[in-house]
Length: 279
Ligand SMILES: [Zn+2]
Image 1 (cartoon, rainbow, N blue to C red):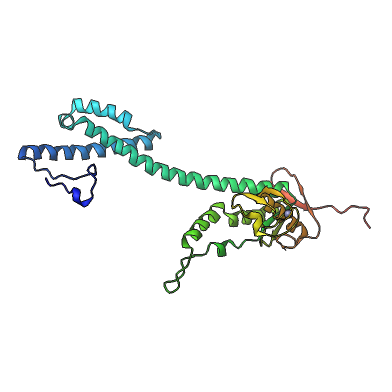
Image 2 (cartoon, rainbow, N blue to C red):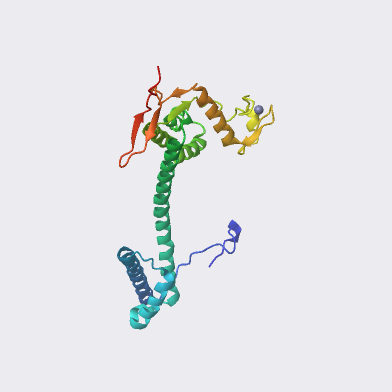
């Protein structure tokens, strides 16, 4: 066999060799192939059965014991080298954990997100009289950055990452829930213009991108020296804007504040009773 060191291939790189077995050897190898396939199918079936029937996850460690027993009982199974059989079972482990992990993670992540958003919006609407949010146009922000064949979009990668983080945080769904829950609990939702909320100092009010220079989560005002977590600083600014009601007040159609009257059974809202002595 000619080795090709001159082509720069490392001496320890993987190589394929073609074997030329004798007729007898060929028969044995073919037999092992059939056995390996049968083992794979039976082992897979066993796992699926146990999972469906008893929600039990069978792994290769346990199946290797079954294999040992099967090798003693079945000649054709015993002919397959033990390591080959164990290797097949371990490959099944790998395949199934990968599939199961992906399916589980996707479901769990979606559930957790849904659950979290509902808890958050209920708490906000129930326990706070005024809720200020940024009036973000989620759909526009997550629009495709691909562009057209004639005018391909730029920063496609960055936009793709942004899309994911925006949709993961589901601000659209959060807002939808806040809109109906504030109505339900009698609190007020105000959407404020989102411009420069992250660059505005909550202490002195000055807008300066320099205040967010160290692109981390820290806000450090370039003018008054105020320091805060960037998200918290922005939230204080959003609250201030909401209080000034400079934004579009979503649930402001009422003139009389509603109070929640706890009732047995269904939750209901009533108008605040007008004092009798009022004139
Ligand atoms: Zn400042």
